Length: 88
Image 1 (cartoon, rainbow, N blue to C red):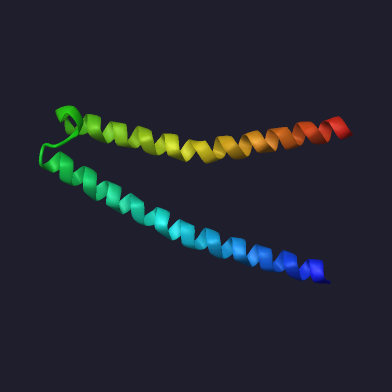
Image 2 (cartoon, one colour):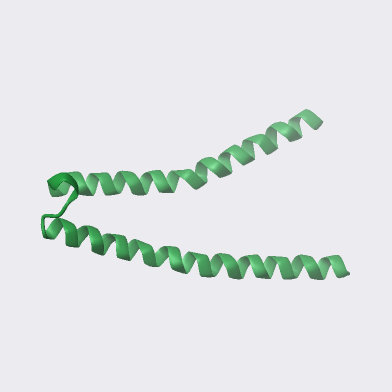
């Protein structure tokens, strides 16, 4: 019974941690967007690149950051699958 309570408390704590961490991460997207719009609008882009190159670079960065968790989860899933096949 005690182990079940500890497991529930750990799950609740992890859920709260992830909820609050997600809020901070979401706010950074708006700040990044505002900074990029400000810099491009005033001509302070990286190496005075045209707007299309700045947007393309920003989009590539977003895709890179988006792919990292999927690769991590996929790798863990593959290793788990391979390990379970060896036991069987």
